[in-house]
Image (cartoon, rainbow, N blue to C red; front, side, top):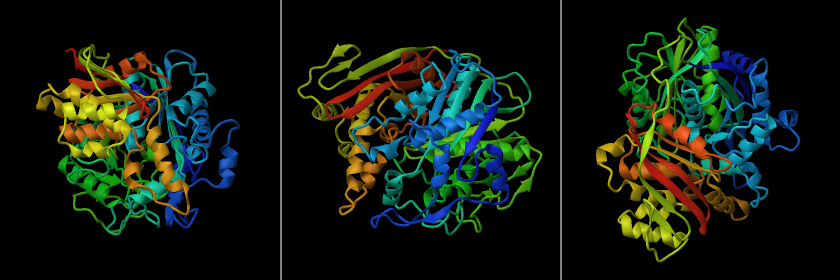
Length: 559
């Protein structure tokens, strides 16, 4: 069973998991109020490394993001004995923007998180292709879920899972453009909450095969899409409730608490409260940790899972810093101060842009595991779109245009009457058109539980460069919320889910280069979700208006 045999957190609160836990137990927060780096930026709250800490953690030849990841992985590997260079070992990174702060200095460099993942893998002499999960704020939970599936199925014996994000003007300005950032430390679930606090940190878990009863187990996980909006969660928490319901928690008396996302934004906390109530879990204590660390984005799911493990190891449920008076309508029991417990299981929930919602059940107790091997599948239909060619099920389609105009031609011919298409960035237009053509003969009921797993190497680089232009000139500073949303590559999944009412698992993965073996294993592992019978899977990369490719398939699980 997938067991966490070691872990580490490096944050402004400490350099180890235990140091960070002790700080939280004492009620210490690293969030401070910050001034913008120039007049165009409003004040904001954040948990940031000091200049001294950045210097101490730096590694020559590596970016800040890469160095932090390496330092955390090194600490997690202390005392762990397995061959990193073995074909049975894999590295999974989780992040939202990776090396994005480097793009502010030089727009010509390759800052894709997939390239950074390869450099990190090379540092540790890991030979297998590193996988980066780039699924907005649920990336860490999605990465841990992928690790559990691949380890339990025997694809790898050991997986290093590391989540990291660093803060910079690109990210801060983007969240401010959405009016989502509080100038003061955040207040999860509180009646006076007005927005999130940002944070930077890194966390690592080593997930291994184990038949021993000791150790924390990733029992089960689930990802579901709201199919509601790119940046706003479903008001009733439909996706979050569906993810929770898949964990079969109602008869589990050993669950100590639910660790919520708790961003302290108006919509997220309200949604989570309704989802918990709808899943009939209102009796469980709930806590949120953003008041200590801030929102650490791609690291959040891993950090908060580690702290929850440390807390139950110490026999305690941590309180929710910043919470005083309940400000949500859902029936939830938010814990304010540490509470003793002897239970050994917890649930982690998390949500993010792109309508994605994740849930994990973690326990020190051994549970039955119904996944022993990966499911096989067959291809139902295929599509390939490049700059000036389109092939559907291997047959070439006659087209009159190329580049961006080709996508508009395909939209007009096969879709039409969906004006939002014209507001999408190029990556989303490419994926939207390709998947819509694939789905045209799929029944509505099949679409509801459809999973989508897309891979690329470039993340959202084309739109990243466009967004940089809106903040580069300090005399003409206008951070664009419309562009910022599309600097998350998983938004392509959201656009399709909203149009088609898809509530299944949706995840974006980044690879240094196309790797059919890895893509196949990830696709097969997704069928571990028993509701998934069919899925869209494939490669979609977009560098500019004349350099893009979508090579996608619908696959069907063989029973």
